[in-house]
Image (tube, rainbow, N blue to C red; front, top):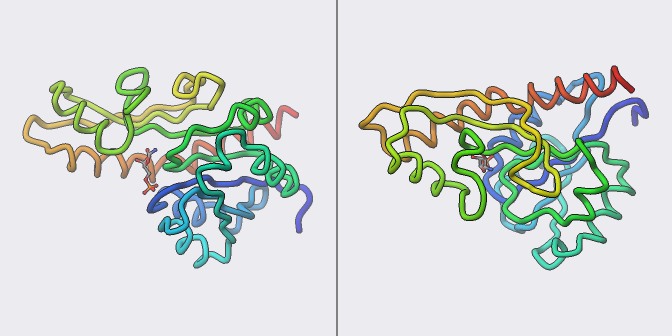
Length: 197
Ligand code: GRF
């Protein structure tokens, strides 16, 4: 175990295509490693993906995420420095958020502050964007603070929407932007904070 590496834990509830990009990107990284994945969903696709990279995944069902004490103990015991939310569907307990100031990253599949907040997840976001007749959408990578979707924005990238695009097509384009940018932006932020510490 390299004691100088920053340890990043991924939290995901679903397929885990973003998580997969992180596994690939950080596989042989000199400064950042991904020792473990956490999920609330025993059958989440992310578990198979993690396994194929030799990364263990632990399941904490929904009830563990209301206070989060056991999860926080686990993160502490594993000496986790950063947390990455990649399609994690539950609200993160406040105790965890407060223990990781500017150390929890989230990605939202729209250009916040638009199309964020309650009920704005998955296809709901892209359907709302389509119904509003937006000509562009994109991604927002931000820190998680006590106000959740309102944490400091780190990075946004945009894509064009054509008037005949379906919500599904918008979703695909946005997901492509996520894959292309999320690991890179997290890496940059972590390297910056290493440099400044
Ligand atoms: C992504 O669109 C992300 O923005 C959102 O959930 C989706 C996760 O997809 N928070 P995947 O599980 O990474 O494929």
